[in-house]
Image (cartoon, rainbow, N blue to C red; front, side, top):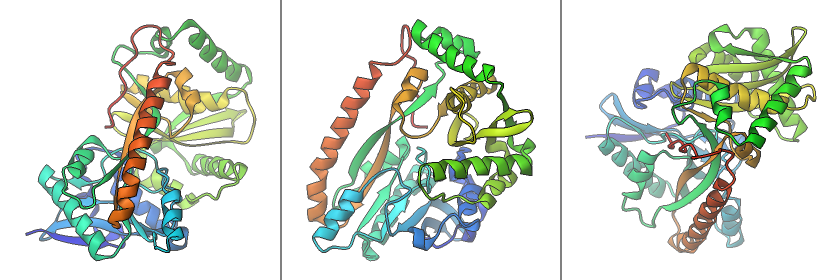
Length: 387
């Protein structure tokens, strides 16, 4: 007989049990990553993030779990429902707190319903829905799902139904025959190949050199420099940074095998940097910042260095982050992301269902349209699966 518990901190779950549920080494679902956000001051109740993790136990054994948060706003999610919240408010209803199953501040697809078996995954989904109803929550949201989670949720007899939303990101995927960056370039059209070489040449001629530093070799000085670049980007855009310097140091200390820095340097001084995380078969671009303006440097640090790293290390796919049609010309193809949403108010859910259907159709038309502009000469390389 399994038992459901909603936990206010991941510290209540043994790291080994949580990580054993993945069956993979997805860095954003690791206990060290998620618990690190809590322990280093990145999640605050007054910022709208209150940990509320879903867990399913068989005695003392964890059989399924999901990273969850009660949200008092919709910031830092990347699946936007502000209009839903405003509509609730106009009709005098309470939308917040809602329950979000996601990785904070990270629009990265992957497993959300972590489980030892398909049955445990299905049981967890059912228990989460029951908990949301009993708790009187307005809604339950699961963002950036992998295919197994989509199938598990769509098979649930939810009343009202799960609302399906989609979006597009741009990912790079090695079709299998690229061994070097020149192999990759050779499959691009002449114009796109020429433009990329020109961008890389601009950086080389500026006197800036690029250095890749993997987690075990990242020192305190390099970590501090990367955090400074991260802050600079947020300040330049007028946004408030959520991550702390302690969290950056925690990543390097607790997850060294997953961390990659790309530093742009001149005369031994770091002028810009990009932070990546990696799994065995996928690279994730996360944060970038710079103290200087150098033509082409952003593309070099955030895209071309990542592609080269994947080719050198046999990594099949590279996700450089959300948004950005400019990625298409640089070899990144559109990929659909999936989310599911349960709304307690059946009348409101009934109104939202056709809205979500129209949104999905618009996203599919958009993906088909931008797919006509991929930069490859012959057969387009296959888009990577969600996981």
